[in-house]
Structure formats: C-alpha cells, structure tokens
Length: 285
Image (cartoon, rainbow, N blue to C red; front, side, top):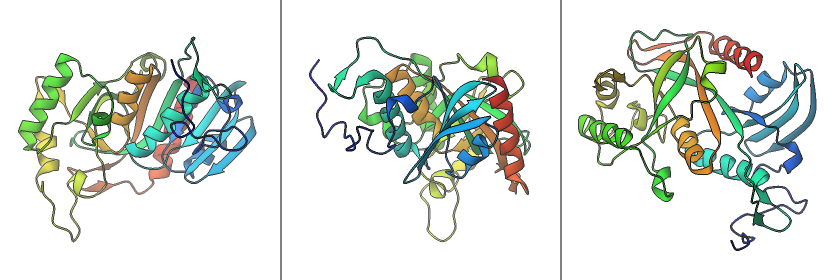
C-alpha cells in the first residue's frame, strides 16, 4: 500500500494530527466523546487525575484516570462533518505509522462511547431517560462519500423512511456494533436514532425561514416497520456508526433525553440529566 500523502493526512510540526493536535500516546483504549467542549470538564471532574489537556478549536481533550483506568475524553463539536474529522484522526493515531506514513499491518480496534443529548420523538419517552442507539438513521450525506454498504434490512428501512416521509433523498441506516451494550446499557432504553444535518429545518423546526418538510417530525414520529419505531433526534450518531463499520472500531452512542418533541417539553435542568449519564458510563467502562 502506498504511503499516505502529506495532504491526505496533515500533521502539525510536532507530528500531531492536524485538527485534534494529539499524538498516539494520548489515545487510550477507551475513548469518551462529547459534543459540547464544556462537557469535557463535566467528564474529567470525576477523574482521579488529569495527566494531559489539549485545546484546539472545538476539539478539547483531557486524558486521565478513573478508578485506575486510563480514559481519553474528547469534544467533537456539532454534526457528522466534525465526527468524520475526529474518527479519521483517531484511527490514524492508532493504525498509521505517522513517521513513515504507512498503514500498520496490525490494526487496533478502539472502544469509543459517545455521550450526547437528544430529543425524544415518541410521547412515552420521558425527559431524563438514558437511551442507547441500536440503529442509526442518517439524514445527512456523509456516507455518500465512502464505500459504505447497508445490510438488506437496513436498506429496506431506509427506503421505507424515504417513502413515508416523502424525502427527496434516501437516508442511510446502520446498526451499531453492539459490543459495549451489555456492559453499559443494561438498564437504558433501546432506541433507533435519527441523525440530522442541522438543528432547525432538518429536525422539523421552523422559526422564520420556510421549510421544505413541515411535517417531518410527525412523519418520523408515526413511522414504524413491525416493531421498529424511531425514538429520538440528534446530529452525530449515524456518522459514528457508519464510520465504525468502515474503520472497524467499536462505537456506542448513549443519549440523555432532555426534550420531548411530541409534548413540546424541554428539561429545566438538562445538565443534571447529562451528568447522571456521564457518571453511569464511567462506572461501567
């Protein structure tokens, strides 16, 4: 395999990857990712010690130990475009020799846990719920740029969602890897998460700008295929699960439900819900 060019994988003068500004020594076997940079501090406040910190754009990294186990926590910012940057650079840090620019013959499989916030799409999912994503539905176009293949059942769901919601494009559907579910999610709600390329129109919200799919939220709320229902909206999980399949990493997305779109309710204390989920994940990894 040819060497990876300097423009395909950009490195900083110190040899760190371009956006994250990290070196291989900063990557633990278990990585927690969060969207909001301030949430990194909500995670690392529980560490026994913090050995390393890096701030670069929206990508903040803390490396430390919790109950003696080394953990890296990274903020990604919002959206699957940022997830694409983070996962490719994390993969390069463990599976590419950054000095020779050659892919390593022996690949490392990272364990990545996304702790995010989300809005429920079903009336019976109350605020404060901790939900893990079994299947992700991508309304973004990230997987169109990769050699990504859906399984037959995933493709069937994608086509039925497109038809039901009268979308002008076909979503992508991807099931999670599942390895971390038994360890972390045994008392959480199992969900099927819709990943959107924006917060307003792509999630059926309207403020002043007119939107193309005014019934999107209702259409997704009512969609079901046998016992398969869509449970929540957010902006990253499908990108995680799609790239996990391509790159061979184990990824789990867990969500703190801080809003219910059907009931038009938003939590008065979203940080409390999120912090409880953070503590739950840390105690179980």
